[in-house]
Image (cartoon, rainbow, N blue to C red; front, top):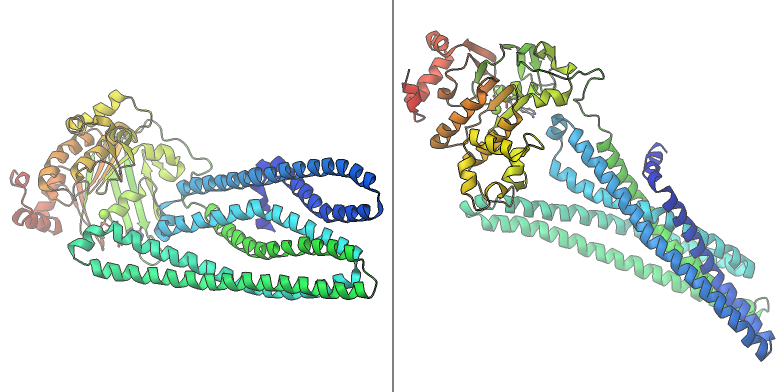
Length: 586
Ligand code: ADP
Ligand code: MG
């Protein structure tokens, strides 16, 4: 009932439409129920009246029927158009709620859930919900009205015949409910199988370069053929069931009419039923039976729609892990002093990723995190903008616990450049402006110049309006990285995180970008994670982190003098293939 109330809430904005919809449904049902009565009346009239009287009554009857059918058409129009529009609007409201929730949810949620799967499930769920939302009430209301209305009239015409009718109807209902269950199960199976086909297709297309480079087209073909075949089989199954369902229903309806005619004929022969009344009766049987099928289908529509709505609620009602404290304050006039005080962290309860970490960085200073992959460097950085919350200890910016600050003001104070750059579908200009929504063209160009990408952009035929993103102009990794750096220049944060910003680039691009990054880091508190040690040699402090926690810390010279892990790394890079001329300048 709780869920029902939440479902009803989505009707609230459309109360008037809903009410009118129901009234129209009522009018339609009453008119449909009236028709056999009118026919019956006509029959009686025609029997008893003179020619003049018949012609006379035909005129007002014709006008009366015309008005009635116009009214029914208007109501039908309203129910179909407005009813569907109402459903579509409710669906759109839910979709928006869902999107808003996706924006609110924390990283930990996305760690646990496959977004692609989530999306496709929710698309079909929302469809089921909207189907239920607009067809549900109207179908149930019209059907029940027709069933009860015609039942009363059938009883009124002949009780005995109606009892026989009910008997056959119950048989039909049992068959119908049973077959419908089976049929719907095959529909569900279809949905799962087509998801499999889509997943296989998407995977192959996304990885087409890998497929071709390994010349594995045949393997991919077989994988796809398998899921394609599974889907086909499921479809065939579905059509067998559909055939059985409809043929069965058809047969039972025939049986119904057969019974009515034979039994009715018997009652006529016995003299307790008028032949004209049997004709009227047969018309009502039609009105009585048709909605039963609709109701049978509704039971499944209800189940699907409601379980869809439950899944929808599950997502919408998930509490994001990380939200503003009730008394959260704005982080204003940021200096950029950062303190990690006795910080512990784990993504799940099993494995501790950070164990009692202490870091202090003065405003405008820089530290570097060095160590093997998986040591927890990225994790340390993720805690600062509160992508995750510490499990022990605290992190402070300018002496204030970050949990006491608003997320927005905290995150506006931090700029991040990562290895992977995501460009949104849109122009280069829009992508840079992402760093400061509403930035002027001058600001955007200034940022691009600082990131050393301006010249490249203006050399493109469309300049700053060049379309990038999934189907846009292909940019090299270095060019993309520069755009992301321009973004951060525009954002102008006091705190900067550079997480392997250049690791994916070749030496040449790296050297160029390094200059932009140094420029970006000026007057900002900076945490750098770098693979190549040359880039961090000037950091005010270097912390060596491994799976065992913090191993060494100090300036470059101190660590070299210590002759430990860092010194060893340094020698390896110096002597190894990763030779970098900067390193020789000591
Ligand atoms: P680094 O940046 O030093 O390579 P990370 O901070 O990325 O290391 O990872 C540290 C540890 O945390 C690794 O063992 C990694 O598997 C784990 N880890 C990283 N991200 C997640 C996540 N989102 N969920 C669970 N475990 C994670
Ligand atoms: Mg990392």
